[in-house]
Length: 142
Image (cartoon, rainbow, N blue to C red):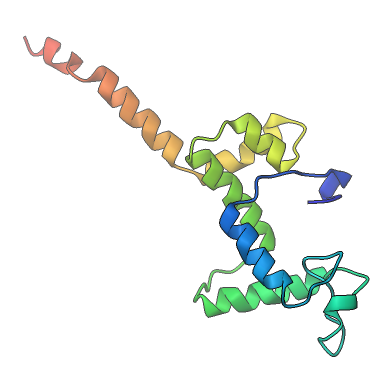
């Protein structure tokens, strides 16, 4: 993302499948500058657009996709995808410092917000503790 919140550029890995989807979408307009160009009032100005899609259009498309997918949950927005991305990375075992860098946070404390979104780490910790303590209770029965 270029010049996001805090005017920081963020570089994240782009999955190969996402790359292919973006290329297929780009073929529909072939704008030389933008992957998501402003379509214009008639919807046909994308190939020559000098500006990118506006946030309201993006949010509207997201709302329609959310509705089409049958997601009725309130307060779900494009920004929610950022939270999901971070939570999935953490659940997959990605180093928290890497997630911090992807999110563009200068302080780890800011990234810690995303840890509450995942239960996997908690479940793994409980399983590890239970495994470690297995057999100790039998010593007291003797």
